Image (cartoon, rainbow, N blue to C red):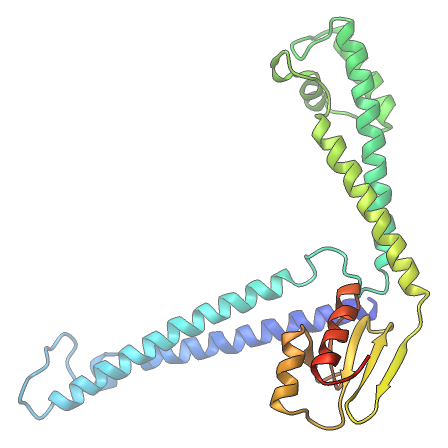
Length: 282
């Protein structure tokens, strides 16, 4: 587990711990909503006796129970939201913050390229045997020969179900057979996107951390190791300065002692705008 994966695991643990606490508060509030006679001293189902000495106590008990039940429901929802966030950690794809991002992207790229080659090979074989009269309704030796050549073309076993699906016209009898064109087009577009992203990350990995000291205002750091653009101030900045940071997408990171956002071209541009808003002449 690398540093990024540990950070993700820690975040998942924190969210689950927060969910446990919210669930505990929900359960405690539910207990406080108890309207039994043992809890309130009022017989269950008894209406409010208007004018009786118990009226005030009865109304107060109902109000407490109502507030407690609302609190229980709110905390229960909060617990569910936190567990959902915990479950989603690490499922958003390969992050540029991951030090192994380039290797992981290359692995993903290799798989997509294999898929592309296999789909092209499968379509070639499917069209060949279609011209020989094999259809999705075919059986016997011809279909077996088609399935065998299909497996040889893609380099791994192919089920009869998939072979029949490939031989089935997609839009009725006149539709194309094989893997649909959109799958090859979309897969090829993803291949190009990944190649471009890998190239960008490889260039970024060769960059070095840069610091720009704007005397009397702040220090701006292009932190390559953390993959962040960071604003560092002497002490806590004023509410106005904090507002400028937030307006330009920067968030306070206690672990770094800096206002930061992910290191991208947009982040660099936002940093320039933030500096101008802070009165720095660039």
